[in-house]
Image (cartoon, rainbow, N blue to C red; front, side):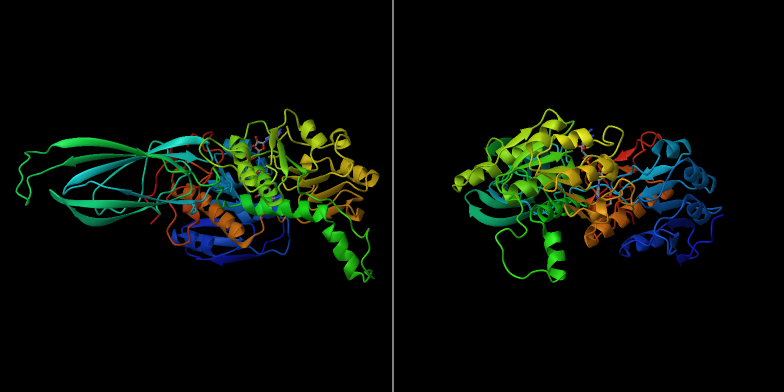
Length: 539
Ligand SMILES: NC(=O)C1=CN([C@@H]2O[C@H](COP(=O)(O)OP(=O)(O)OC[C@H]3O[C@@H](n4cnc5c(N)ncnc54)[C@H](O)[C@@H]3O)[C@@H](O)[C@H]2O)C=CC1
Ligand SMILES: O=C(O)C(=O)CO
């Protein structure tokens, strides 16, 4: 029988009842819900993992939406209860949602949200372009091509503007991954014969390299105070192209919600395992250090070694870059899909300098990359291997007794994805048999438990699923989870690109009126994705 659960209530008279099964970081998520007439109930029960019965008790007879955690088992029973209580949405406060039976949710008409990674728009390159022309009433259209680092495609942009315009938003055929709100146009007047001409200076602060830019000047000489008569207008088009040199790296990765935070922990575990930091720390605290010794805690040098990534998606690619760039490791990766973006980071693309070329230009050995044709190839060749796939039936026990056997005896294995990607019993045995083999684990097969023997292994570093635990990331995750639920309650459409949710995270402006990421939107028939909501903010 479920016990009554302790709750904290915000905005008791709110029309919609939204439950969070845990207190979450920050207050923005609470404020956003309250401002939209929600009564927010936060479970404060001193129990880390709530049972299905506890959550049913929380849902009660009327509940519009729930924000839950990856430790909870969201299956048929809970979605049935939520649907009976009138609930429309459940959002996991996590990127991964392997704890959620999405089919069951769809069956009960409940939308499932997650807190996806975001491609934020940060300052990347600053190109200043000056162009001339423009007389009186002149329309200038600007066409430019950008390399979209995420899609690895060329995006084409067009903008028409008038003198004095400030470019608030440049839109084009494909604006995915690009935010132009930082672009600005400055004008300066210079006298030139036959009238008044202006110099327009476009200051582009973009996170994508501009490959080429075409200016199309359509100018109309109108009957004006200058006394010239040109009827209804003569227009002339003048094209000019200019190629802006790409900055050093063709693909500057920008800060994304969980990506860098999680990748940084994987990098920390790699380093800690390589240099035996935890063992050495314990040794010091135990008072065992009595002087420098040539053999004391000798570990592995990373520079020039091979880093292997299995699952080179968002987090895996960010980790790969950190290890390649930070420690000049050579890369081998395995993924079902080619990661051209990552490859190009290492060896470059035409017209730009890759990291490898950059090293060469500085007299250093250039780094290399290789896409493996099998996971075994990575396991065989790499010195440090980090796992970053999603957990599904294809990745369950991806690393098992047989695959461990092909790894180098002194290899390092890191897992920040999901515990069941590794057969933990086989791993413990392998650690026992190979004392120079080391692991760094953030996730475990039977979380929160470890398989017997793991905690005694000196060659294992274990941390309690903290890879996304930076303040900014966790507050952002709470905000996205709340907005997923709010968007469904309010009947807002679904944001088109869950990879680009930076607009929802901007503390200084209201989020768009959309659900940031609903994973079963299509299955629910909610296929009205929202492309550009900049003009229709939430308030
Ligand atoms: N420890 C933590 O705190 C965190 C863990 N995660 C976990 O990391 C996972 C990955 O996150 P993202 O990088 O954002 O996902 P993603 O979807 O960008 O990347 C996953 C990659 O794995 C690849 N993949 C899928 N099946 C594969 C297979 N059988 N073999 C090889 N590659 C395969 C996919 O093609 C994809 O490129 C999440 O699903 C989540 O479970 C995410 C955030 C924090
Ligand atoms: O987001 C996830 O998937 C996690 O594991 C915790 O951040």
